[in-house]
Amino acid sequence: MIKIGALVSGGGTNLQAILDAIDKGEIDGQVTSVVSSREGAYALERAASRGIETAVFSKKDYASYQDYDKDLADHFEARGIDLIVYAGFMLILGPDFVDRFKNKMINIHPALIPSFCGKGYYGLHVHEAVLKKGVKITGATVHFVTAECDAGPIILQKAVEVRDDDTPETLQRRVMEQAEWIIYPEAVKLFAQGRLDIKDGIVKIKEIKK
Image (cartoon, rainbow, N blue to C red):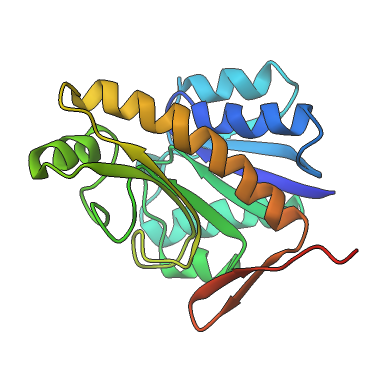
């Protein structure tokens, strides 16, 4: 069983999807620490209601991002965390943090990377850009986290139809329901099973030996 740490900033719907999958026995792991970048994030209430340790690491309390990254990394290392999941975390962590958890951090992005990703593409901004461009298919991507935003090796993707009458809000909801909440728990399960093999920046999913 792996120990999972979660980074959050808001409601934590993807965290909930992972917790639900654990409850169903689909993931051989346990979320043991949930850290928010700000006070009042509803994701903290989700965790606290299950008896999961919570903490707030606010950037404004630190003189530099290096100090912030170090304390946050120390927090997870002290708890023996095997996997860190970004679940609506709105900060970009520096290379020092990423290096300490190389290939042990995953994120979900609400588009089909390499489209509509990188700096500035987050939350509703992604879906606004999708609709402005007029693409017919969008979706979600689970990827390993690297120092470059949204550029890590891709683990899973799932497509979602864009409809003519979509608004950013309706599209966001459908991408969550039809893609994010499905493939994020699946990616965590694959990690826990030791089935993700990275070679030359490409993720291969290993078959389970019978």
